[in-house]
Length: 35
Image (cartoon, rainbow, N blue to C red; front, side, top):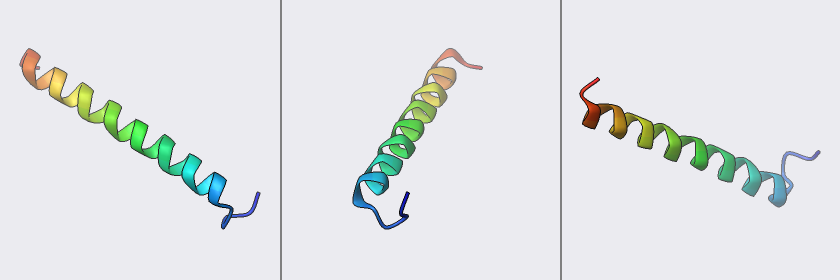
């Protein structure tokens, strides 16, 4: 696996953005629940 490979770069970005989106969703959910 080459670090400069565009496919893996996009894959890493997709995974990271998905993780961020889930984290934000959970945070907002917890705030609304008053936890």
